[in-house]
Image 1: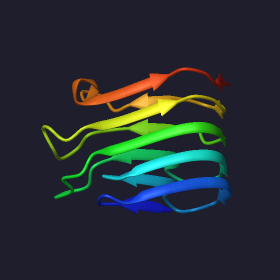
Image 2: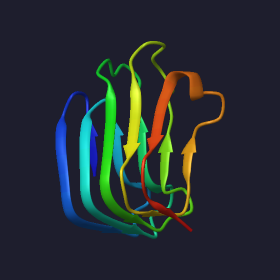
Image 3: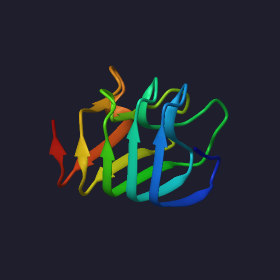
Image 4: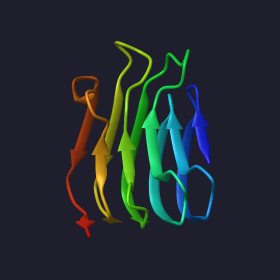
Length: 117
């Protein structure tokens, strides 16, 4: 799944397994997750980023999810110098949450609750 370029998406009670990329990509959009289960996706569970030319902020809020990939949530900021990229985790089960190397000053990651295995 991909939310792109200003879209608003609510993900509720969805399962995504065995994709060749990420289960969910938040690309310059606002996404709220409440009940997402992922496993076996090659690149990882969720990616929050801005694609080339995307000018709208990328915002992810996870209320509840079970993300089984080693890279459960990856927050990165590849193209824009000023457009915000944020992720807030309020609950769920994860393997890892990653702020991309060298990009922490351009991203905001907040973990309020959750279980990390």
